[in-house]
Length: 222
Ligand code: CA
Image 1 (cartoon, helix red, strand yellow):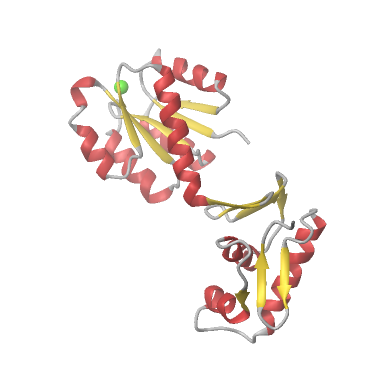
Image 2 (cartoon, rainbow, N blue to C red):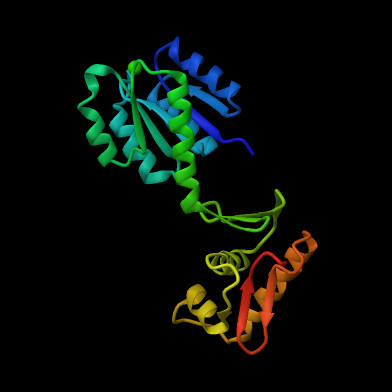
């Protein structure tokens, strides 16, 4: 699936140009010409990455960055004018992922976006074979097809996926999911059975193994 990029840039030439180039590179792009419009689009679209110009007419780029960091998982690439370079240190401290100084080559913007997205997904997505779990969106898919997992089923899958092939005991899983307020031990078995059935329905046969008397493991079958 292609990544969603939101460009927040007031420059009436640079904004559309960036959008066009990014679309050409395979991204799904929206362009906001003001900070307020940008914040609305962030709420509507949950972009994967935001290309944010610091010098906007209505809101300071720093203010937008703070609001993004408080409400969104999106990565942020800052664009600064040459005379604003001293602001770059501050925005990196505020949680921006990277910055570029204008003027820049589009190829460099593209390379930085790709690097940012790789870093962001490293912490967010877990893959076991063809099973993919997005820990931020709490969303799982197998061979690109979404799985309809309950929150508990997702948590179990995400826990097992942190160490593919390792056997997690019922107690470990129970504590990870419920902490000290653990229900009866067979609650885990019920959730695991449902998770396994959904995996098998999706074609993920042999991914979830039961090790009798020990616990459960998730791995790509040989
Ligand atoms: Ca500007």
